[in-house]
Image 1 (tube, rainbow, N blue to C red):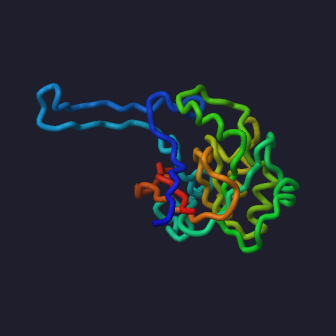
Image 2: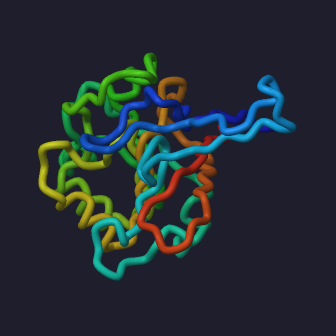
Length: 210
């Protein structure tokens, strides 16, 4: 059997969330230990919590929703890029990374990944992400999926251009993956988002096959 590497982050009330968003709520409504017949848990969280995907509707009026994204875009060969040491990822950086021709899915391993050594940490604002010209580079090179190892593909203090460029061109975005135990190179990605109607983002379980 192929080796499976889970690159999803665990959901917990202490998981970092975007500024202004409520933390994950995990409420045990029924408990066998308390005399109930079954254990039942209620979950409450935003659709961009933990490992999740962004659909075009997130930043594009009347854009496609998450359930309209073809699963073929979320399953298949991918390349993990080692971008550690970079504060941000620009088009010039992508030109230097020797990305194989024909690559359609890119996963960015940055210094963000070490933050997952302590999954229950405060949201770190100065994370590494893509600049707008890097987003345009992705579009120009026919890449249809990008993934980043922290809360956003876009720098915290940047305008929304990175998201808009990617999503208006129907590039799927996966955010909040954990690449600590993943080296650079070729893998097979399997990312299965929850099938929720009419939303711009949804939680997902993402794994790599080596």
